[in-house]
Image 1 (cartoon, rainbow, N blue to C red):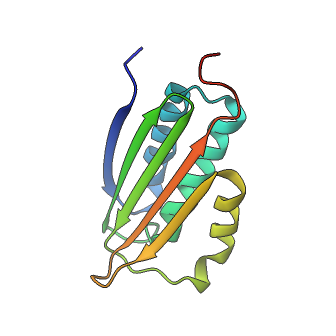
Image 2: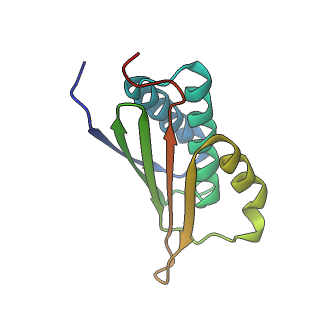
Length: 127
């Protein structure tokens, strides 16, 4: 197995048919970090919802995701050129809050939206 920490970068059009790439990458990264099945499922849900929050579901604008894998931990950062509305995405944000340890979504003055999330495994990394 590859030495950790490791990083994966993913850039794709922000259309629904491409979100599968983000979910699959999250699942693989979670597996490499030592997460169990339920934690990996939580990661897939969180990444999908955060991509939705930053406006990446109806646009050809690119979404960029950066995954940082460490033993027992996964951090994901995402960026989109699409502006987002806090009010419109409250449900998605509530879902994300339920399945990750910490997250943040920021709209920037340049019109881009960024997110950050971290999930830590409940199971020790040396299992």
